[in-house]
Structures are given as structure tokens and as C-alpha cells.
Length: 370
Ligand SMILES: *Cc1c(COP(=O)(O)O)cnc(C)c1O
Image 1 (tube, helix red, strand yellow):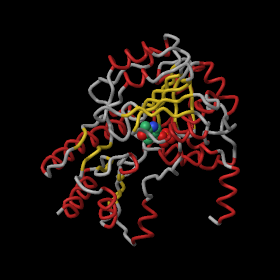
Image 2 (cartoon, helix red, strand yellow):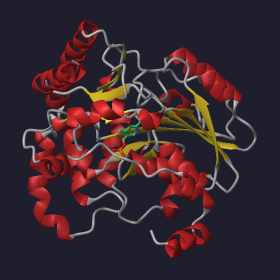
Image 3 (cartoon, helix red, strand yellow):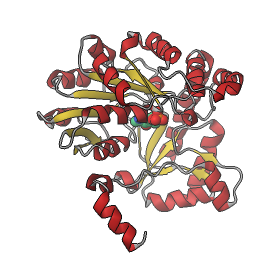
């Protein structure tokens, strides 16, 4: 930027906006191909489904492709019906969004006035900080306790000015799931002057039935929003579909200020199809469980510490500068996520891939560490 541009930025942009570092997503495959001239690239950086999208969803998109000249249903009616059925909630409580990121943002936008407080864990999903800054809210970041959300400390941090608490459960980038007892205790301490946002993006990856029931709080009339996404297990990250439930007053507020056609036409159609693709979900979970075991064993053999996960990614300590390691892996065609921006200088976050992808990653990692 020129001096004048910097000056404009300083004078005209709201100061809070400039406190946010631009979000650095996992590097796209196309970019690595272009920059390094590689062809066979494995991307394990953004927790996408390594098996791809649900075939049923892809087929539905093909059938609907000719209709993209029409605006989508602005109210996402069919999609909302499918969500209501899935989550066992009345239609009036259902939220849909262009990715759950949009719902995280819209909840902030309708609730946060200048000076209101927002609580979230650190490190956690970056989106919470982005939204808080964009809304000029006061950020209260509560450190994790051994990779786990410290819900007691988060409850301690609530004041009369706390409008929103964002909770990623399981947490990203650590993969740890908080259980029912802790959630119950937390909800018992927070009043309904605060909206609790449960971001359950990895809900489906919990296979032992220990995922805490948060829907019961909504049914009891509490001010809680529960968010899920089609970006992870359903393999539809590129379409941007998030959904969830919240109190009807919150749904009403969001409907007033959201963009009129925020969930695109193909996204609505594909999500409904993906929800009914039990086979795809089953295969994805099998692949994830097998991949998890393989990577755990490989890390243990290499003497690398990792955080046991309830998701489709693993936080692993590589014992040296993870930015350098990331570059070296990239050169070998493997894209992962270096965790220095999250404060973990020697850790990587790696998405659990197919067996072949996991083997590629481990082979490259062994080379780089040797
Ligand atoms: C991946 C992820 C999401 C999903 O975001 P979308 O906008 O739905 O793609 C939300 N929250 C967390 C914690 C995530 O890791």
C-alpha cells in the first residue's frame, strides 16, 4: 500500500477491523500446482472429506444444474424441513447459512453492539475473533486448559455485558470434545442474558455416543444456538452450507438482516440429498477411524506427541519449527496446516485422509524429520 492508502486505512477503517490478521486458509491444491509445478498433491489442511462429496448430492446437483438461472428459495424451505426432521426441532427454530461461518457471523451481527463482550477460547476457531472485531465488540479470550476448553473459566468470565459465548465442541484446532457434565455445569452458571453458541461442526465424527446433548437446552427454552455444517462429513465444503437451531426470536432477528438469497440453489438441493446418504456417512466414518488408528500408530512409532481427537483432524507436535516443516512437506506435495498462528510453534494440524493419503503424509514427514 502507498503512504496515502495506509493513511486512508488508518483514518477510515474502524480500528477494531485492523486488529484482525487476515484469515489464512489451507493452501488450495491449484495454488500448489501452479507455484511448485507439482501434480500429485495431497491436501490434508482444511478437514475436508477425503472421500469427496456424497454421490447422491453430486447427482442432485447435476440434475439441478440447468435451473441455476433462477434465484434460490430465499427461505430455504426444503432444506429447513430436512434440518428440522434431522435435529428433531420445530421449523421455526431452524437456521441455515452460507456455511456455518455465516451463521457465526449473523448471530454476532444481530446481538453485538459496540462495547458488548464476546467470550471464546484461545486457541479456537478464528471466525469468532473475526466476527467480534467486525462488530466492535470487546473480546474476552479464555486460554485452553491442556488442549481442552476451560468452561469453568469461561463461565467465570461472563459479565452483564457478555452477549455471546462461542464454543467449538470439539474444539478446532485441538480436537478435544467436552462432555455432558461440563456442559451442564456451564449452562447452569450462564444466564439467558447471554447467548451460548455451540459450534458442533464435527458432531458426526463422534462414534461412541458420548456427544453431549445440547438440544435439550433449546427445548427447555434456553438462549442457545447449535450449529452444524455440510462442509465436513457431508463433503460439501465448496458449496457453503451451514445449518442449526436457535430460539425463534434469534431466527427472526437473523431473517431481518441476512442477505435475501444467502444459501445458493445448488447448495440447498445438495444438502438435502447428502442428509439421506447413509452409505457415504458410514464409509466416511470407517475411513476416518481407520486413518486415525494408522496415524496414531505412526506418530507413536516416530516418538511424536499428538492430541487424541474426536474429529477428522489431529494436532501433532513435530518437535521443531512447524512453518519450516510445512514448507518442506509442501515441496513433497503434501499440504497440512502449521499451527504457529494459533500459538503452537512446533505443531501441525493434519486432516485424516484416505489410507493412501495418510501414507503419503507419513512418508513425507519421515523424510523431512530425518
Ligand atoms: C470447519 C468448521 C466450521 C465449518 O465452517 P463452514 O462455514 O460451515 O464451512 C465451523 N466451525 C468449526 C469449529 C470448524 O472447524
